[in-house]
Length: 258
Image (cartoon, rainbow, N blue to C red):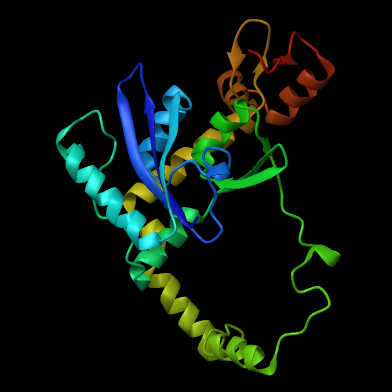
């Protein structure tokens, strides 16, 4: 078996999804143990409503192309794009792995986390991790040290070393030319030039500062920080810090629950 088609659904929501799974070494035992579909819309529904109560393998195939064609046929017959109960958003079939598509897929894979259950490991989008952990999965970190490293006891061939060397040509940033090239690149690709990014960063920094600030009280009023207390009471920060540390004159640090 090289591929299979499947259907999943939430009966209470009347939401359904029909898909195909094809990958070297794929097995029906992977279905919703290490494979949870590749649809972001399906993932969003799972995060909000949990795992689907209907999970069925519809058909298995010995040919990948046949499985893709069959998926397209079924989706067209059911007119999934005209019916809101189906989560399928297209009938495109297989992915055309162009360089641009590979870059998109690479970006999507960043930030994924490893989970393990019953000895079976899977790599999932971080948005799904909490939901699956609630279902009994645990976080897992691959160990590639020592003999567990795939290159343990092996050496790269001369051909491979040459390819590695060629791939790094022009990427050295230790020379004056490299430093200038990196500087020019960063000037034209600085994310802080985008107003939305700057605003997001500023908000994050404010949140960090508020979280790290020590709230204090003089027994009458609660201040969000030592600086705020110093400004409002006209006392030096060092003095208020001393009072709070030694609990003098009614001053003290507030419990984190306050």
